[in-house]
Amino acid sequence: MSWSYTRQVKAELAQTPIGALPCCWAELWGLSGQLRDPFEQQLPWLRGGSAFVVRRGFRLLKRLQLQPTVHLWRRARRVEFTLWGADVPPPDIDQSLRDCPDAFLRGAFLTRGYVAEIDRPVHWEIAAPSDPLASVLVTAITALGLSAHVSRRRGQQVLYLKDREQVAYLLGRMGAHQSVLAMESESVVRSMKNQVNRLVNSETANVKRIVDSALRDAALISRLINLGRLGPLNPELRQLAELRVKHPEWSFEEIGRHFSPPISKSAVNHRLRRLRLWMQNQLENR
Image 1 (tube, rainbow, N blue to C red):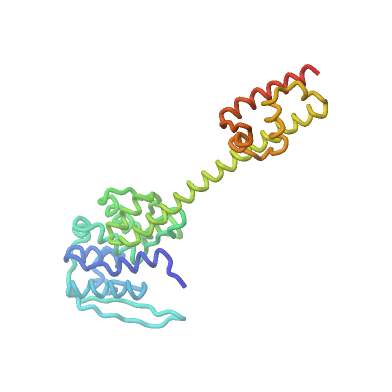
Image 2: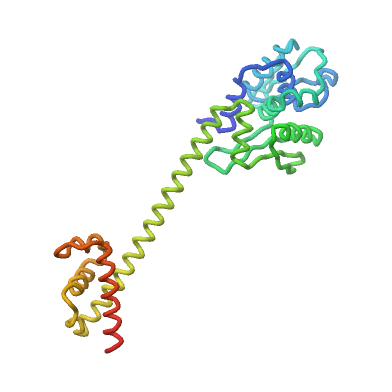
């Protein structure tokens, strides 16, 4: 069973190199979803999440010398994790946002983020369990020069982006470069498909117009033949009328090739206008 695009992005983000200490703190704050020192509250830095997200948190805690420990237990058919750290006072979260807003957003996305499949309309979001955390996320996104929309869903705020360029830029800043390439590749393929569809639809419409016009001409010519009014027609227009009746599906180029000598599409079009005018006069003078 293939992974969703969200899971692919998170797996790539979890494998990005561990940065400098300020960015490690920023990402750890984002992972935790908390705004106060978890140790003071007797809470873990991370609760739940997939195994690769927990491994990412463990590496960050180890890099920050927080002596990480992992507790896990089985609940129903899944394993749940909690990640604890030692009593080391973290830097102020505002300082972490100023240092590395992209690292903070990477951590938040790993635990509470979602991005739509690349073959669907663009949508990126992070859920914020509390309003203060939503404000911090807005600050981080604004620091990157982006503008997120905010809505409320199931009692919590959700920050989201729907612009393809902004989402691609943000994923790149967070470190998901391969995922950005996959998104851009899908965008190119979709653009090519749309272009081909437009060309096919345009060509189909052109063919339909040609066939409808040819059938109208053939019906008019047949009517004049039944009335015995085609006799006075000059030889070159008569030949065109005969070809138009026998082969209404032919293009002007095909009709021109069957003249003796062959004539161009422009010449066929000119003679056809003369033929239509002549037939109209014949019907009006009956």
